[in-house]
Length: 314
Image (tube, rainbow, N blue to C red; front, top):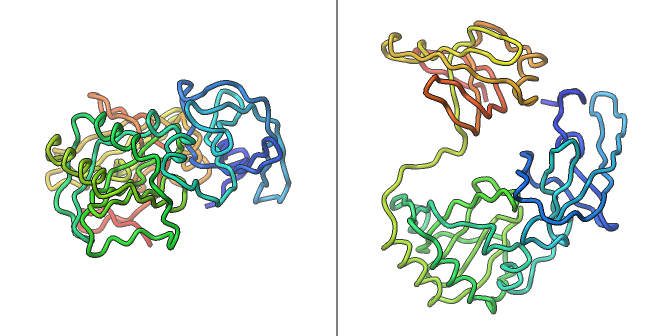
């Protein structure tokens, strides 16, 4: 859905900026925290278009270095205390794994925790690593690993590998992946398109062995956190959602208080036509308190109740 200009976030209004005569595009629509910001880099010019009026807008943003990351690859830019990760419009890939490691500061900006063991396309279990220092130590020594550029696609069929969930605020990455394969490859979509490097079977084998021997079984991590139910009340700064209709026993239901301070959730109520009595699903990335208060809600959409299930239109 296209939102009116006044209901858009800074990242949505200004999907591109120009810094040092170079174009950068928005990497992730969520703002970064201050501890990600490094030294100030000056200013950059942001541009955007109102899809309702076709009016073009421009604004001068402050630009910051992202800690550990080359400004030739990523910068943080924004205004009003909100800064977002922007990525240089550059399809070239670093020639070696060492270049990637250094340019993006992977030693400090990437962690290895949740992973899946895979044989081909089959999942053989999910695990949580207790400490990833050894993995980063091994990878830091793979600087000579060469770029595999015969394809942009990491072929998973007939391959044994680990799939690590890769989330990094500094890199503008949310639940992307890093593959470490038994035949010696490091592959990732962290940088919006696939990067594949041959780090060697010895290094990959050490990583796989360490991860398997220093982890515990874990539950799957959903891509999005959700709350579903009937919208029962709309207030200025929150809404109430009752999930009783989705429970086998309605007495087991819960009423959630969803805060609407984020413009992305507020616009769903004020402009999206959602009303009391609608069956809705809310996406959030915060926490649910003991009082069933939900922070970090960022979207809401309607569904249809069918035999106690909430179905979402395609």
